[in-house]
Length: 154
Image (cartoon, rainbow, N blue to C red; front, side, top):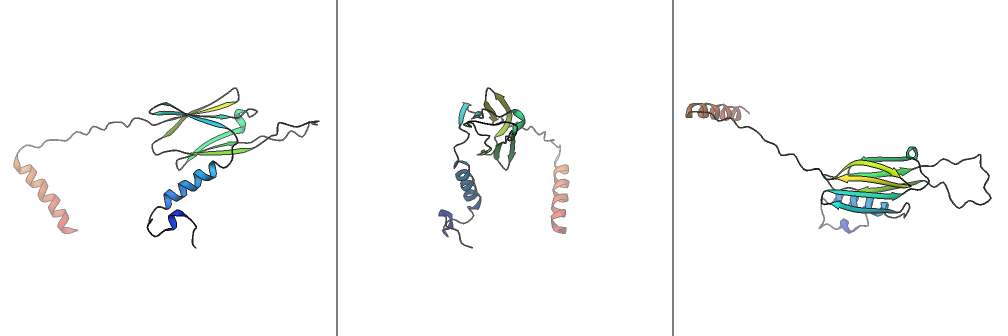
């Protein structure tokens, strides 16, 4: 099966993940609904704001899978109403955002028709490991013999 892609060249071996990422980005940006903003709050915090007027909290779903934030909105049709003019449709949407490695969605808030999704890059925790100090050359030699002996048996 051949693909028509920039990465189909034999010079680009092993770039399948990058190609899939670019395909997801292209597919995610093809529809302009709902409109959104992305703002950088500081070097480690971001906010995505989507205009989702008419949607309630129960009609919106957020999920993260494989570094992809997926936001879905579903409104049910109200069959009990008779419209003389219908300019506000019950539109469903699915909007996705590819997140860089290390970014985490930490909160989401719906206020006045705007869905705000807070994203952070957590500060990595420093790990401290205590190394025991042995005394005398005999202990060091016996430890080295044990390690070397295991290597010979394998």
